[in-house]
Length: 476
Image (cartoon, rainbow, N blue to C red; front, side, top):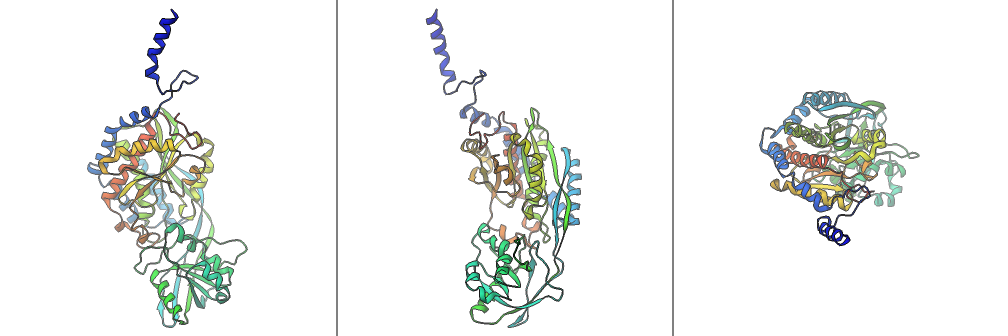
């Protein structure tokens, strides 16, 4: 009898090969199981692509964004325009038939640039285009008239510290990359103030310019005098550098009326498609609704916000309901360092184990090439399989390191994260400038971005198991 049992047991072994036994009698999925599960989404992925790129939803995210951007305009934190934008989106998401549409209150910075003016007085009269930097203080009412010292780096400024006292520091740092060069915008005023300068004018952090200044946030430090600071165009920075190199004396008059007010009430805007089986588990897609007060905020980050809305719309239009809740969050106060997102994180982090993945699109919606992903190797393998379903539009790459100010809070705690990777070759031509308008956007490229965003978010939300977290490191 015992031999018959042994033969029976041995015959069972092949079908369980490679499947570790678990205490509850279930057999955890192998990667081959997961690969087969994802392959089963081929038809749904194709339906999403067809609807977004070729079907009735073609150009919808672009057209929605155009109406929004043309109607509302730029949306600086604390402004009436941002308030109007949030009200607009709250109504639009409800009309779209999404679920649990609501606003979550947060406090955001309120800074206004006021009147701005800069004029070169020596060696000739020349109007200098400027954009004050966020949180900058104003000049005295009569303005500041001072000689200029031009430097190409913080190191040069420190070497010439004795020359800088009482002068306006002009930074003519080369554009290497946004991540490296943006520190001059962030810290230029602080470093100039440390050596006794009365103001700082910083070459815009831009890879290309047509006499266009680019704004952004800057940070003062406690114990360091606060001096007025603004960005100038690449052309004016280079011109003053050439003048300085020739030994020409440069004198500039600067007047800025910037003001900082108490923090304002604002909101993160939220909508959902509630999960059918695990509604407490969340796949989060997002972009930020605020922008700078120049241009229309169409690229940064209207495109990212609207393809995130489009992801829910496409899924709803196809009559799909994933097992997990697909949650759209339109952040507020991103441009000041993710202020709204941090408050969202503090409010929801007690449920962090329920967050399957956090996704943010905030680097343009140009021609997509793939997905940037942060997570462990096993989660990355799963995402690669999902991205393979996007072969019909040739967007299959998985890159390292998701990037998103608003989702970093979650990724630091081990939640997998993803950001859209697209063609950034022209992104910093328009970033934080008057050029950030609907003219930058391309409807066909937005269709492709929406398809990528929707396929990835839907499949992750509908798979039987959550992605392995950084902490777990296992298929579960």
